[in-house]
Image (tube, rainbow over all chains, first blue to last red):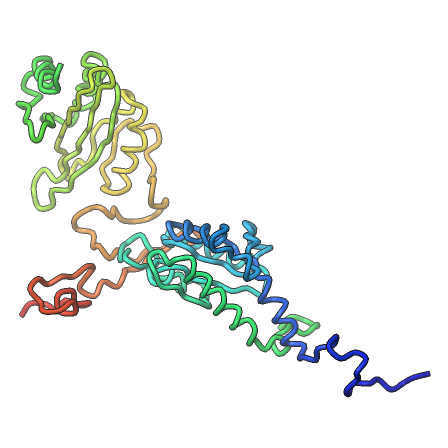
Length: 172
Length: 192
């Protein structure tokens, strides 16, 4: 019975096996299947739709499965003006998303309040939820959103996943 | 039939209550002297003069003047295609006038918006709640003495507000500067 496993050079399986770190493999799965939660609040949502349509085709980056349930989403794309009336709803939806979760603030309004220096508008969605990538523009073109998605993928790829995974046991 | 003729008819019906019609750029405006009788005037305008469509109700804050509020009714007749504007004044102490929801049902949301933004109440309104801001928001944000940046407030589990950073703005411009940085400074320093 053969007990030695050959991990060295083996000409029979060359080209079929890739060695990597578990972190990198899991992150690779994650980053190529980021399901967005389209938090479309204003005109940026139109550009978000364009990014999902045939001309720009967000499916090329594995993020075409727009989920309207926070429980099935990985990345919340806050596309538009966050009013104070909507702010706590956005926060609640973010809290309902399952870990791991990320946020893209799309456009000037979601990033900083934009031109709405006003009594009615939250001055940046990062006042209530953590933002991973900010996209400039009013509204940003779909290419800018795709660029933000690629930047988020790079960020996901770098995450020390195993070190941050929750260990089994009582909650701390 | 013109709007001016219709305004004259309204004036003939109510006499002193209705001011002489003024015309500006083809639009006719009359002022109703007593805000308490606005619903009565509106009812006649609809039933006898054919103004069957209420386009809008708006309000003006004449801050520092008395009476402080002007409420403006935009009337239109789909039959005769004439437009008439009614204005009436309400004092700040009173801040109340009769509703016209009994005349045009569409007045419901217009009056709620005015109540929400200006704080003018409409007596007899079927459901006078805020329409844009949430229940419990303590201010009336379209009043002239309310700062553009807003004020902090909080209704737990509903909504909160903070004052926005204006930094001398928004949209500060100073004409005559040699470049864009001078013409559109991010911050306006107070005049010495």
